[in-house]
Length: 314
Image 1: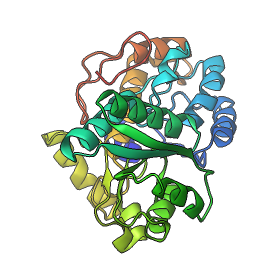
Image 2: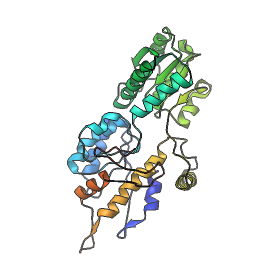
Image 3: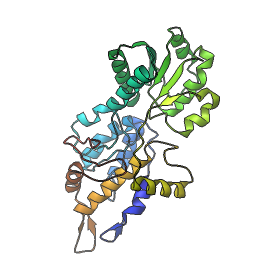
Image 4: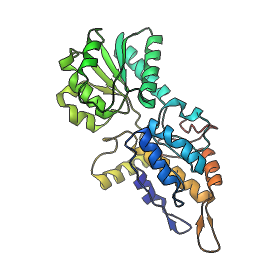
């Protein structure tokens, strides 16, 4: 999404934008490593990320010290904007919203009264699981099991078998797709063949469907898809032409990736100064302030307006 945004952004005072992609592996350690690398590069002026909440939390103080603004399309852990960062902003909905919706859907729409909740102990997974547990209980439901798994394992039958003994009607899973695939594939052999798998934005996408096959039939995943608009239609067409797959098939955050990068580049254009020597200067303090003061910015995912702590998802 961000790569298409760079193509659409044109230039600033004749200087082209460049997207520098780095892989954090979705971990806090990877997030800190990437942040340390980017923060020492004087040509890096803004961060369209990070993507994962744990990685984001680890990176935030590094960018804070360097004075580099962030705009995440997908870091949804609610406390991230309570940490006092002046540089972190996000356009994604938070897990407080996602978790409440999931609990209400499980209870009101699907009619379940007994569920189990599984997470990975991380900032994203456990934070989301905690919201679902609290909201489902508040509705009158019973959370019969609440278990943490170790990320990266290839067999979770022991955990699932223990949960099966408690007779849940559904398993709510708040982690990422790799572990979600293993869990879904383990459910039948764990005595949970008639139990519904209910995932999150971390499991949403074609990877889950492709790797679970028949075991994934009937699974749910909560996510956010933008409303139809001319901007969305154009982006969807550009995305299909560029990558050969439909938008949203891999992740629900391609639209947000475009919007996050677009906001940052628009703000760079506002504060950049062409020097007498022909160099382009992007004052970091001015850019941090400009991003935080974003208001009424029209985008695919909706008008973007940031509050004083960087929640730009209202």
